[in-house]
Image (cartoon, rainbow, N blue to C red):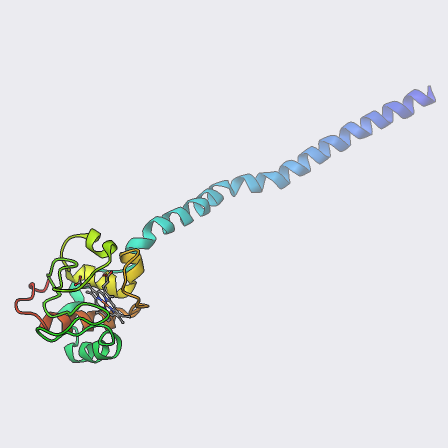
Length: 176
Ligand code: HEC
């Protein structure tokens, strides 16, 4: 009898313990379940950022051109681009093609210059926006281009250079 009582007592104690543990773990688990929506939002965030990244990387340069500084652009050009390009009318090709009239010109159409097939395959004309991409990161814009140039990371520098390129042209396209 005494044995039965002890056993019964143990069973009862275990059952009570299990109930208490159950309640406690419920209480512990419950707040985590409330956090679920927050975790779902955090999961979605990186996907959105990744999708938005390429567009956010380069804002359109068109609106910045009217207020750009042609003289500053010329100075940057002479320091950074002139090593490989001439820009006077009828100037020679160097490592890169002569750039008189380059704004609005068909891609890869500079006379007497042997372009990479990557650049010729790109197609279309050198719009202000395409030049912006090209001088930001040539390899990102045209994978395999021969233009071995690190790029101009500052938007103001690119706007100034493009505004300068625009002045070295028989009939530049209108500013956007
Ligand atoms: C290290 C040499 C080098 C430097 C520096 C350089 N370029 Fe180039 N660039 C090239 C070469 C080479 C090509 C031809 C690329 C090809 O065929 O893939 C080219 C092509 C271009 C084109 C396309 C021209 C066309 O006729 O289709 C533009 C626009 C251009 N460069 C602008 C610039 C500007 C602006 C700078 C300065 C911010 C610059 N480049 C700096 C070597 C250079």
